[in-house]
Length: 282
Ligand SMILES: [Mg+2]
Image (tube, rainbow, N blue to C red; front, side):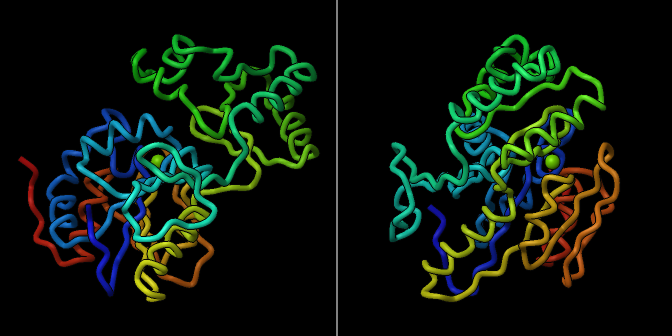
């Protein structure tokens, strides 16, 4: 377990296209820096649109034992005994405590079913698509698609209708009191949660652990759903992406922009920031 020392820096990181290569999901280029951060007891906290089951597999590969944020900030899992206290709002989930910012998937499925009556043939939800349909739409293997479909707090939908119908759909969702988050491939209905809210909440937990001392939060991301997190942190790092355009932040902090793409950019920026020597991964 990583211990939390005073003068703590925290690293919050998006996964796809940021710590993981956009095309092959490799983090090899970031491995030497991950090792150095671990040696310096600097926690690396995944903040992702992925599900708990997907992150659990990756955490093992990344050798991380930190809390993690799933489904675009809808929930946070904290390993039991990571902090020396248990926040009153946490739920017991086996080896983890869970902080829930969104209603359950069942709730979202009910909303989506209602909308499917009004917008017939305009979209297909993950439940309807099933593992094979998700694999086809994402390029994931069947076992990976199965993990992506084990969801706690959201029900992504694959839009099949026209742009005009989509505009009408978004207005209808907003009239129901929700917002629509447009991801790379899917639409997500949310009740206002985002990655920034998750970062702020977790930073408060570290602060509590540190006896009120405010940790310094670095955040790394590459696309639109990272903006809230990048604006909520103390040092935003915008990782260059070949699929997303340049992002603009509304923040008084000077952001760092990487020259390299994905995990190469991730490693480059953190090496420079911490004055680590640049190493080529083996
Ligand atoms: Mg990303």
